[in-house]
Amino acid sequence: MEKEEKANEKDLVIDVGANDVTIALLENHRLVELNKEQHDGRRYSVGDVYLGRVKKLLPSLNAAFVDIGDEKEAFVHYLDLGLNFRAFDRFVKGLTPNCDAKRLFSTISIKDPLEKVGKIENVLEQGQMIPVQIVKEPISTKGSRLTAEISLAGRNLVLLPFAEKVSVSQKISSKEEKRRLENLMDSILPKNYGVIIRTAAEGKNAAILDAELASLIKKWEGCWKNIAKSKSIQLLFTEYSKTTTILRDLLNDSFSSIDVNDENVFEEVRSYIATIAPEQEKIVKLYKGGQPIFDHFDITRQIKSSFGKVVPIRQGAYLVIEHTEAMHVIDVNSGTRSKNKQQEQNAFDVNTYAADEIARQLRLRDMGGIVIVDFIDMDNNEHKNMLFKHMQTLLANDRAKHNILPLTKFGLMQITRQRVRPAIEINTTEVCPACKGTGKISSTIVLDESIERQLAYYVQERGVRKLNLKVNPVLEAYLTKGFFNIRRKWMKKYRCDLTITPVSEFYITQAEWFDAKGEKLD
Image (cartoon, rainbow, N blue to C red):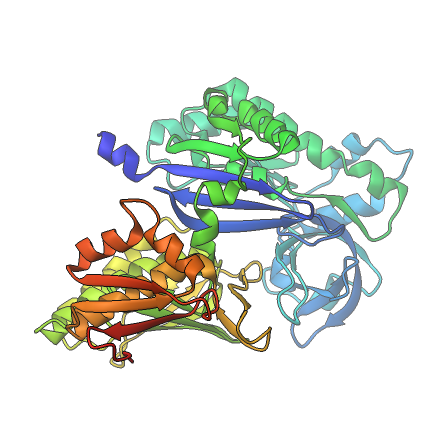
């Protein structure tokens, strides 16, 4: 039982900088998600609700461009207006500084829904003010994707203004629990409000759900004054900060710790957890160490080694990840991995390792749209089916909507993954000290891993057992410091004789290999 809990262990590490907050999610101390929240003034995030102005109708697309204050015009399709758009429209038009907003909201009829197949020009007109919510952030040359079906997400509930319905998460399997939650919501929901009951609500008592419902309604009603005061383009309300949004969606019993390096954010997180899960308040810790928080938890190294174009897997295999406007392409390479006598089994093993890393990379970089994976060719259909099912299992816990197709006869796997914000890209290269900035080298933080891969290649593939490694004196000191140093570990691991020679003329990351005769190795 303890092993099972350990396998699901999650840690959240929050690094608060001068201009941004970076949130790292670790599973068993391995980085699986990285999120950044910028402090750069106005930003457009999924979940934010605006009062926008219809800029232009596009009858041929049955859609409209909407101005929400961004340089790029946002886009809303007729099907995203929602069945109860007319109720929202009447409410916005009827709000004035002197009216009774609560009475107006509760008396608006929602009995005349939009036609499922209709024309945008019959519903909207140029210059019309409409409430909209961002469902997809601006990506590349495209503006935000919008919906007029406003929803407010909480830990246990999702509030739906102008929707008199109660829906329960399909993941709640108990019919008795579903009935209890439905009856509870029916008894406390005010008129013209609907709600979606999330999986986290299972087993929660009435007081907790009632308090959360009241909080969501207060947030929705809090924007009415601004609409009444000014029918102009404006932000009505925003989602919680990305930190608390991640906590809201991910926090469960398997979280073991949440570490924060800023006192204000620490208090914000602790206060939020005290509200949604009081029993877990103790897992929030304020980090006061001397070194940067990401260095302390070995996150910096993982970022540098995981966001490059080439991503090492294990035993010499690696991925090459390319990003184009239309899709992401991932190529699987066996590299210097020892060739198995049975090529088919070797290909299957490498592909399985690659699938593990690809599933992690999809979440880590938040890749969206079309992803094409070029696996190593396999002839065995059973192996192909096993790889397909393995990938399905790996992505089962991915929060983004996705679809996976079986391998084609060319060994390609097609994956589509919900894209709501641009993929995370981090520059993992640094200026080369040897050429004064005219070229680039791999990051120094993973240099020892790169050297070890070279050593493994010479010993395992080339059969060289006695080697001399020439490096800069600084790197030599790093590899030989202490009795149980890196050099000794490598010699024991690869059963070889390794000498490390310092050369003062070498630049800091330069490394050259020589055999027992002093001849340089390729």
